[in-house]
Amino acid sequence: MMKSFRIFLASIFLLSCNIEARFDKVKWHQPGDLGIYPHRKSMLKDLTRNYRLTGLSYRQLIDLLGKPDRYNAKESELVEYNIETEYGNDIDPVYVKSLELKLTQDSTVESFIVKEWKK
Image (tube, rainbow, N blue to C red; front, side, top):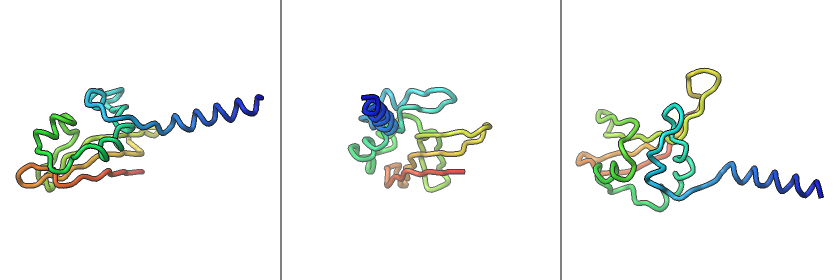
C-alpha cells in the first residue's frame, strides 16, 4: 500500500513539473518577482500553436502580448518577450528562454522563434 502511494505521489510531482496552460492575455501580462513572468512558460506552447502570430501588425501584436521586453529596430526589427529566466548563485542569469519575433519593413510579424540560452 505504501509503495503504491509513493508511486502515486511521484507521478503527480512529475506531471506537475510540465503543466501546459491555455494562453490567457491577462496572465501573460502579470509579472512576478524580479520582473519575471511566471505564467508565460506554461502558455507558450498554446500561444505558438493556436494563435496566428505571423501576419499580425505591430499594433495587433502589442494588443495580444503587450509591450515587448526588448525591441531593437536596428537588428532587422526584432521584438522579444521574456518567457523564462533562471538565476544561479548571483545576479547573472544561467538560463534564458524568449520568444523572438521578426518584423517586416511595414511592421508586420514575418516569423518567430523560441530561443534558449544556457550558461
